[in-house]
Image (cartoon, rainbow over all chains, first blue to last red; front, side, top):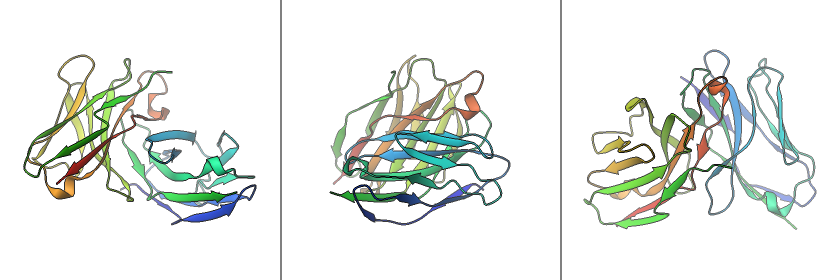
Length: 113
Length: 117
């Protein structure tokens, strides 16, 4: 079955530091890949997505590239802000309409001023 | 931008009681989902729903759980006899249809925090 593995947190950084959160997946076929973010006390928000190999998703300074050869979708941001403190979830979905999302365990990121 | 809305935001109930968690998906979406997140843990799939029937469910979704779309707008999750371990945040999600639906993301509500005492 499908599964997503992401690095455990918490990840603690200083403002303006570089952030990487590793994510690898196991899936049949060619899934779509997503990063969701959960700010404190809030629900899950889509951060970015990529639907085929070598696609790069980007949003709010975050980027992730769909790497089929390494089955990875690592999230990066060049200069984090305190407001980026949140839990980040990597997820995948099969291509058939209606397929569910399978989430990784989440990575808590804490950015200190 | 259209949103998925969930009510209530927090529900406290006693063990053994029935609860109904309510969701209003985005109006032109046809695929609906429930997920749960036990505090500090992974987001877990419970059930997906399409065309007025369950399309997939996880092993968590046992006979104590049921879902319903009672009218054209609401999507509910019922837990018949709550247990302490049902305490979690429950998220509703919906997904669009049409061209590209398989690539479209799930849109989540802000969740209902269920506390079973």
